[in-house]
Length: 242
Ligand code: ADP
Ligand code: MG
Image 1 (cartoon, rainbow, N blue to C red):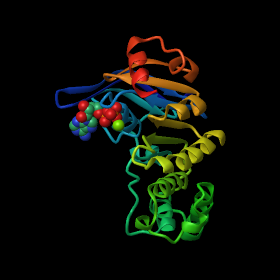
Image 2: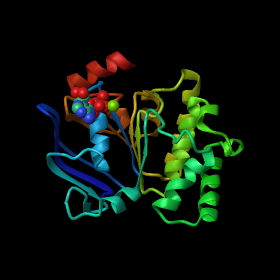
Image 3: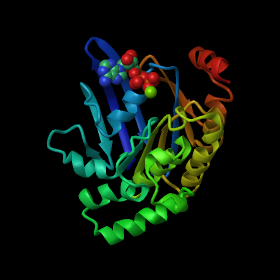
C-alpha cells in the first residue's frame, strides 16, 4: 500500500482551475521533490495531501484511508502528517521547547514530561540543543525553520510535507536547513518537498515531479527529470532555474 495515493485530483478557486487532474503516489520511505514554476499548483497539491484545501474532485488516500470521505476522521489522519511552511509559523509567545511540546500534549495527549523529552531529542536532532529556552524572535530564520522541523517531528509523523522550506531564508542559512532535511531523508523519513533547490532535489530525491499549469508534466528519478528532461516545458523551466 502506498503511504499517499492521489487520484484524479481537481481543485479550483472560483473559476481558477488550479489542479487539473493529478494522479500521484508517495511510497513509504520515499523522498519526492516537486518542482515547477510559480503558480503551477505545487502548494495547493501539498495542502490537499492533508486536506488544508478541499478538492472539488478526486480522492486522497493516506495509508489506504480516503481522507476526502466525509466520514473520515480527518484529525486522526492529520496526526500522521507533519508540515513545514516557508514562513515557519512558530508560536511567537512560546519558547522553542514549548513550540515543540504544545501539540504533543493537546493533540496526542502526552504527559508534559514525556513531551519535553521527545521535544529535546528532536531539537538535538536539528542541532538546537542550546536554544530550547529561547523565543522565536531571538532566532535566525534558519534556526526558526529547524525548530519548525523539530516541532513537526515531535508528533512522530509518517510523512513530512515541506513547502519551500528554504525560500524565505538568507542564502547563508539555507545550508543548515538542507543538511537537517538530508539527514531526515537518510533516516528513512517519507518526505514530499516542494523546492527550488535543484542540487538538493538531485542529490536527495528518489523521484522528482515537475508540475506546470496544474498537471504533472513529467516525473521520474532526478537524473532523468533534471538531468535529461523529455518534455519541452520541463526543459524551459530548468533552463531558467539552473
Ligand atoms: P505554487 O505553489 O506552484 O506557486 P499555488 O498552489 O500557490 O502555486 O497557486 C496556484 C494558483 O492557485 C495560483 O493562481 C494562486 O493564485 C491560486 N491560489 C492558491 N491558493 C489560493 C487561495 N487560497 N485562494 C485563491 N486562489 C488561490
Ligand atoms: Mg507555493
